[in-house]
Image (cartoon, rainbow, N blue to C red):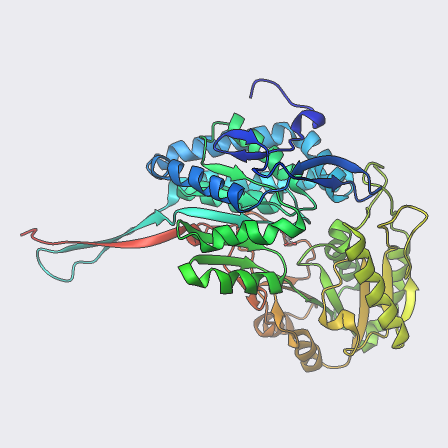
Length: 490
Ligand code: SIN
């Protein structure tokens, strides 16, 4: 990297296709706004099918050469990209805060989190082993080798504008795939900045292509990838309805899919838990990114014996959380992403209160701060008939449900079509074993609220999707196994 770029130099408004910046074929643009104020940051390319096709054409041209690079060569490129991301951690963190609304410290934290996947998969690139299969017949040798699946389309969400795309692109490139990517319409700037740094780090033209599209144009642009048989894999993080749509629409060309979809995470606190540790863990898990993560606890079940003590301690700490713009270093919770998000949060809280929930903290919009702020909220006496018990609120709201027995808690926790993350607090070793086995989720936090790690497999069960990101398993989704059988060896 020649010299460190400042925030304004990282902001790109065009698509990145075949190693070059280009406007949408239609010439259309749409506004990316600061969720704290509603002000336009810049106008980016509003891509359609022609741009999606141009990205696939570039990825197809680049694939044979990238596939044939040595794993060590791909690892070296990924290490340079990682170094460039870390070198720009401050500016990238500011960019995340600007377009997504995370407080600055969290924005920088996300940069390092996303970068950790790039470093991880740089190492994993050199560990893609196959197998020599023990001989079955004389004169025949059988083996299994792993090959890149081909062109990967990555479709990523707004809540982690850097980490989610990094943890899709890094394993794809490590495996020898080429990539076409479309970040969420709310937060395309960080993804475009990552493409800029990847290019400067030596990712060859066409190996990584990023296009932006408005909400309206996303469907036709992505439809182009879904129908194109050259695109061999879709990796998506986002809502379950969109995940199902992608699965249906890509069936025509039988693409490989990784779907990291919605959650409705339960957080169970048993009578025998360390209450202070449980409150601390819940604060960490629930208020990360203002409650806007797929793994945020959405339903908190507290056993009767400690319900009131737990609720009081939690409400005191939640009421003390500082809400404000991402640019204020004191802010712990920033604005929500947009008006739709804030309306959903308000709808969930109003519905719960109308059905008898008691507000212990928050419970209102903070319009004095701006259009998209909501007060961190604790609601007691939540019940299963409330909307927030079956839909992800995706905001800073903690509903507290009361339970009596372990069986009741597990039944309630599993009573959802989703199965991404779950959490529980208990100091009883036998209960820990029982509950961990029975929770229907891809991820279980046991006396721990902070689960994110590049070394761990991230993904869900049930309608939270399939596939795993990160860890030694994270490359499998980008590889296919080829069986070689060589005869005539006697
Ligand atoms: C997500 O919200 O989808 C990802 C959260 C994480 O990586 O911990």
